[in-house]
Length: 340
Ligand SMILES: [Ca+2]
Ligand SMILES: [Ca+2]
Image (cartoon, rainbow, N blue to C red; front, side, top):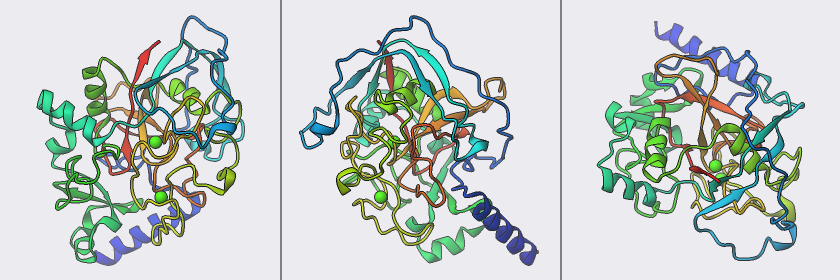
């Protein structure tokens, strides 16, 4: 029995190697994989507008101290999302398509632990991870002994994820952790439903996938990243991802092994931070538009501190992944939007 389990785990690891999949979409509580072959419906809204010209050229102003409070007004109109050069076809990054959006506001920053704590204090809200009593934790946050004890609670197709009892947004790095020093880091271990509850409390909502991606692109067309196509302009780190070998040996050359403060990486001329990297971000959209199940998959965008080009090149604006809306993990957060 033990041998069979070992073989299954080995096969899962080999499949991951072959597909270049980071396992980012394997964190569903039931750990169920669903087909992703159906085409995504085009997202259209009313009142198309031309891009306005209020946003400056970005490259000359990288060194300026930015304003970091509040939300940015993102111009709508007809804009391209997706790509005709998909790197993960199963994710349905393709095709490139035109969307029509109204103007909208988007939080400049991922929602922080300090902000989420105010919400919980005001509402006595209990997150889904707290109700379920567990969440998914990356293996390097566990000791070798803990990993041994929890080896039956690994995600079969992503063996570096452990389902750990007692982990929640309050204890993001394990049951003995707390939020000290992480106040300005993004809240994690929050489900899609938790994110909706927070945004609603703020008089906001989650962005649609199209809104998120248009905002990510910063007014630029057909670029990989919010700032352009080069990963490290001026030889600087522009996002919090993984450097080194995965899943062992994160050198943290960008300064962060796990999350970074939400105010750290300003990435485009909409004054948005950490759109790509740091934590994945929930969007409002269903992964399958016709999914009527009780716990459907929702689209998440932007990749996380666990992403690296060699295995999970999803820190691009066009990249996308999904989780069931009750799922939570240590690399998944959100930001809110509002109508313009
Ligand atoms: Ca990093
Ligand atoms: Ca992010």
